[in-house]
Length: 351
Image 1 (cartoon, one colour):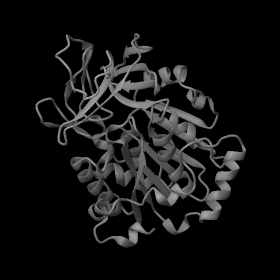
Image 2 (cartoon, rainbow, N blue to C red; image 1 turned 90 degrees about the horizontal axis):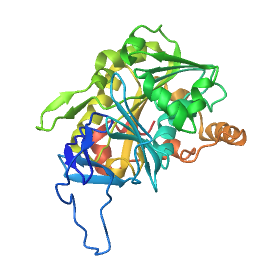
Image 3 (tube, rainbow, N blue to C red; image 1 turned 45 degrees about the vertical axis):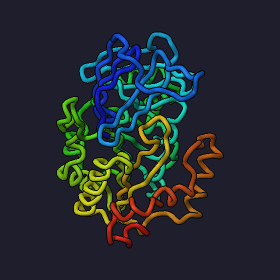
């Protein structure tokens, strides 16, 4: 998502893309960001806003008028937790919303469960990124899992989320090994055919600066061909790879979706499909992931997925957004989006 610097009455945020950098400082009000036709409406004194340059889309969340719960600088980024009356606690990294307590379930459950249920018996899992711990929390709901390697660059994000979010106990599970290091390097050094499922909950690969120039972000390497080839290499023969793939409603994001899917197919995955989910706290209310499978024919049947899901639910580890119908319906896209992403590859859409 390509965003730019915006001004709010109290706070100034530098928005590049979602999951990217910002500056937060006290500023004098430059006047209203937007106006309302409703006389009783008033702007919040404190808000987080995002402006997508290429489409002109603007969105903000009103915050409770109180000091941040957390506001600290790590070696890599600013870490902030603020509060909204409706969305609850909000985690922002360099000012860009990562999650809210209200709707974090949608993104994180869909990053984890379609990939986990796509494999018939996932035992060894790698989670790249996702320092908030929510994807890890969802992966661990699957009783077949014997070992999870979680790789993240910033230990301070993990420390903050351990303390302030209800799923922060995920790292205490004995099946988890936490690695504070670069994800691409970890993958490059991993052994062949080891993981059954890999979930890459990474930041966006590039952004625009305030002058409209596109710049690469550190996560760029996680979207390059060399990294995809290493991902393919370290997956087992029936391995599954899921990664964050931005919004189809933003033109430059859609270009990326098409390129990354093509890259996954060229790497050797027999199926690479874009799945969509709704989340109101992200720009345009939509984001997606690409699910890549080495052997889609080995996937579970609908009844088998339902049985596994019921077992998880009955064990007290149920979900609130994901359910088995989404294992297929999340890949049903608007016609123009499907045509843009897949072109004539209709057989891959049906897998």
